[in-house]
Image (cartoon, rainbow, N blue to C red; front, top):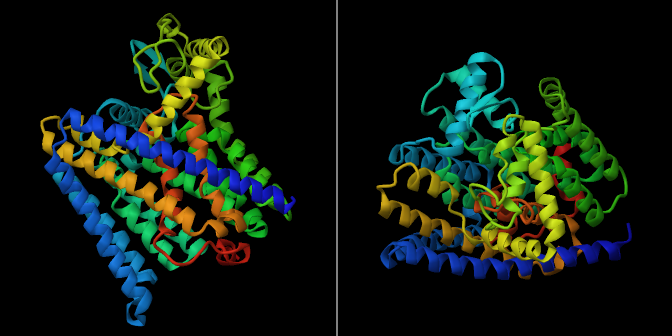
Length: 485
């Protein structure tokens, strides 16, 4: 592919991220004003901000010493990364001791489906007075069911599974960052992940985010491998993408993300074959569940049947951009047939979009502000919903989450400015931004919540780390593919 096309694509993606940053600053300020109105006091906000500022400054001083003193170079060696990962582990264990996990809402439903699956060996749910056989994507319930069978059904079983996912994800982030930009970037990206408030808050919950985040990270390694290594690793990436799709069906469209990367990276060598092979393995990973759905439902249902209801509630005259209990038209008469219920939801949503394109566009912009505005998912569900009496703790947690989120974007844009020439020369660096734009686009159409940007955060962490590390993204010959060989 001509280099000028790649450079143009890189400039386009970088420009979009700058626009998104401006929207993020505005959205964060609006959410902060709203938070103060809802009860976050000035002392709580100052306390959270001071803590994050001091942690950042302490890390910056450590890094400066490591860069200018050979005796401190061990900070960025594997032992230093291991120490950071173990600190993150200690933080999560301490969190579980302070905030006992209580499953509510979707998390209670996921755990119930897992318990039923572990006990009976069949997958079904009784919801809203009806029997569903493919309502919830099976990925997380199957994962939890495996944990229940191995360690037993305990209140701490989801926490144990999530702690394991934290360790795996930390290693994956560190390995990817080190291969792309060196030990300094690996250190900072793993540190930012270790102190991520929302991820810490999710530790004890039966949430799909930790599992989906890890699987997506493995699936997207394909974007950062040289063509030869990518071809060898593409089956693993495709299987991870398929498992991610079984956890959240939005991953079914990951080949679109891979195609966008193909435009930026170029299609020389075996790269296009790697993406095609990964797409094939995605399909064959999901296919057994799709065949199962056809046998029990008598219809083509790739993963689950709850997408239509979500789509319609996100696209109707009563839609607010985020979760709403129902749409203008009542879908409940179709609940007796989950396939028909799903189909009608998609049909009504598409009908409204075709009839009201301007309203749909306005709603999509509003969804972006919801998507960007805060990062409170873990704190909200672990504290506010589970322990509503802990008002001060929740307010401080919200402030810490929002400071961390806004700080990440400040680092991200500083990195784009600092390494702007590298981002134009090396398309791999631009591909680190693609997962965020991918989910941003999806949730401009479906409902939007701050939880939906979580899977793309690891890639943003690596870019943000470039604001603090000196090395740039390596060229294709120096990337993860060298280790993969």
